[in-house]
Length: 121
Image (tube, rainbow, N blue to C red; front, side):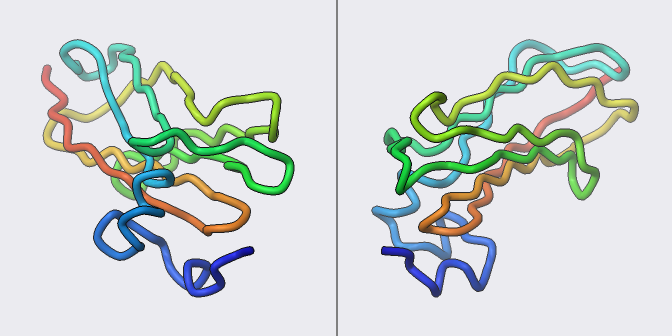
């Protein structure tokens, strides 16, 4: 059954129920040194604990942003995918940035995870 209160906000590990957050907050990892204009790999996995991917309960999509700048969306199909994606990203400006990933569960709403990165010359 859907938890309707979770659909009234963007949920995080700080705002959502702890047990639900463990299965819904996107976890972002990056590889290597991040340089201006150079591709680097970003992996987004939904939850510290595995999230089910059944026809009645699944992750519908994941979005990636750098701050408020939209980078990508990946739509996911129940039963045929697991909620983990790897993207190759290029950022054009140096400095500290916050990568923000959003995932949407059909029963538990939208969840946000973040990762601070430093883009160098």
